[in-house]
Image (cartoon, rainbow, N blue to C red; front, top):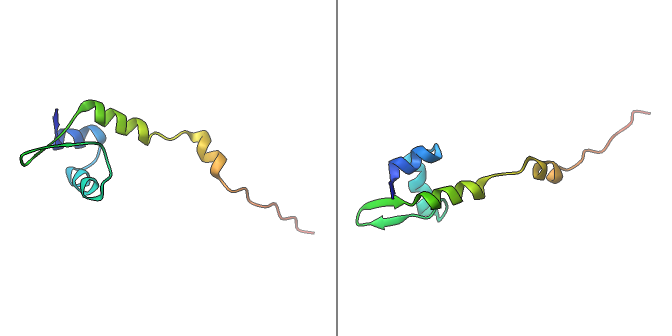
Length: 71
């Protein structure tokens, strides 16, 4: 079980970001143990995996610009 600061460091975000995500119902799964917040490594790994984007997907979503000819 990783503490909030350790989890934030692993994800490359501030602990405050994790707190904001929790209040918004976003972010990785967490466990509240009294006043302490904990994150399982497998839940952080799953969150990173879900956050991955495929560059080819971004190309598919782009709206093609119409070609305008100057005649």
